[in-house]
Each structure stands twice: as C-alpha cells, then as structure tokens.
Image 1 (cartoon, rainbow, N blue to C red):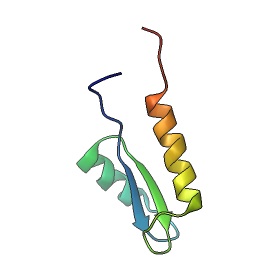
Image 2 (image 1 turned 90 degrees about the horizontal axis):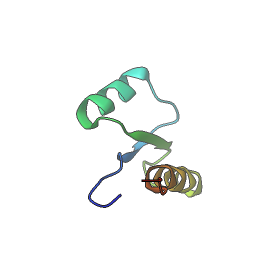
Image 3 (image 1 turned 180 degrees about the vertical axis):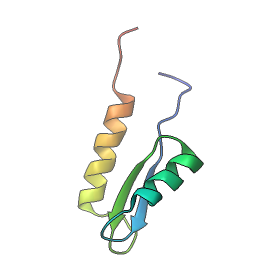
Image 4 (image 1 turned 90 degrees about the vertical axis):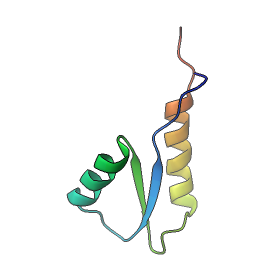
Length: 63
C-alpha cells in the first residue's frame, strides 16, 4: 500500500453535527471522517475512533 494516503480524520468543536458540516468537509477534502468534542481536542473516545479509522484504511489487502 506504499505511496497512498488515507482520508483525513477531522475533529470539530460541538455536540452534534449537521448534514451541511459533512457536505462542506467532503466537498473540500473528499472522503473524510469527522469527530466531535466539547473543546475540539482529541479525547479517549475520539482517539479510539481515529485508531479504527486508521486500521480500516491501512489493513493489508491481498494483491
């Protein structure tokens, strides 16, 4: 999988998201994941989501 990138994982401040937030992020960045926190910083929950996101996009595939 050398030379490839994974979609970004963005963290925004807030408790809920709107469909417009997803649309704008995808328009600007393509496929991406979004996490929400009270202060826009990472926490244990967001860290776990990021690890799952990273694992999903970096798992080995049969060639």
